[in-house]
Length: 126
Image 1 (cartoon, rainbow, N blue to C red):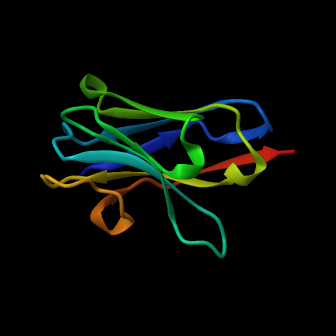
Image 2: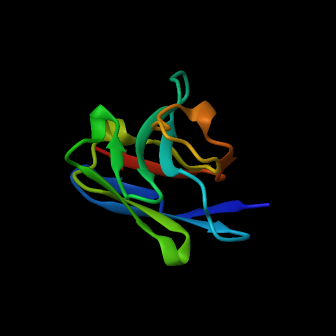
């Protein structure tokens, strides 16, 4: 059973940066996508970024384009999220997710992901 282990959340001021990591433990990841979603109370879970595991193609939520970068290390079964120029509205619980199935299309919706990390809090103060 694969487990996703996240690290890197915390409290920063607006304009600063954070880097999140998510390691897939329990075997070699061979699915289609690994990505990050975020959630705040009263709002739907939102796609932050996702990356196709084979090609490295990346997809971003509109609110983070140009500020966040998703990357991966296949050898370490790890995905990273570099978050620059953070804003107070980026405050949320960030969860790593993995779509373990083969897929031709793009996994942009949370229901397509079958493995989830425990979540890490990111708080950006103004």
